[in-house]
Image (tube, rainbow, N blue to C red; front, side, top):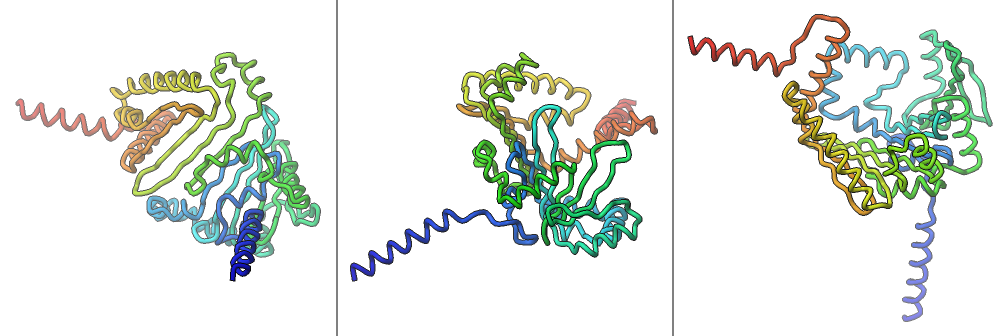
Length: 348
């Protein structure tokens, strides 16, 4: 009996060890998790942004917006031209950033349900101009930039994923797949990804090497407080009609972190001064919290849908006025004028 217990315990330990060694599998459309998208990005990826497209496209606020005439028409045109419904067929978008400085470039990988031949047929029906090629056994389509820019490439990686971007970056994705190497093997990036909220609607991680930070400070001495910068984390989520936004600067200097937080709080206070002219800005500034810790500076804001709507209308007004269209007064100011007019009538 004791021997059976020992054997059972040994088997349990072996199974646990094997489970711990299991590699992250490729993302299959409809059942994939956000973190699995990392397996398709090149090993030398230094920054990544992953968006849960399926969840985003099915938020109440987005569904409502897509029912408006202009947006509904655009959505239907896209579906007709591609045969893909963004609300049903697209699941994740992963953007991988490679290189540094002016040499920085990136690639996008879309996780979706699609049929390659049907998609190509749709593109041809709509007179899209592209050349069909093959790279390392992977079907690709190439598009020449009209302005003489870098050639763009699309690659049908498998039945669930398409890579899109500059030719060199897409080929790096394919090379990584063939070698069995991906961003998951990038120690610096994965060290920062541990701190990301990978269940958020959208999240991003950027890892920095000491030599990159040194060059950055040499070109901009005012950024000396970031000498121990290791990474930057981004996170955006939307629940209960509230947009939760978080931005974290990861460093190893608690004293410098406090300096950075104090400086940013100063900028926030200056922004609040605009509240007299634009109350929406004041509301936004009041929602932002900036704090520092032993290893990070955290900027956090919980923005209710009502405030987002106000900010959206304010931005639309500013854009329309700057484009030289009919002068549009902001809703808040219109209401104030109505109240003033009522007050004057009462006095009379």
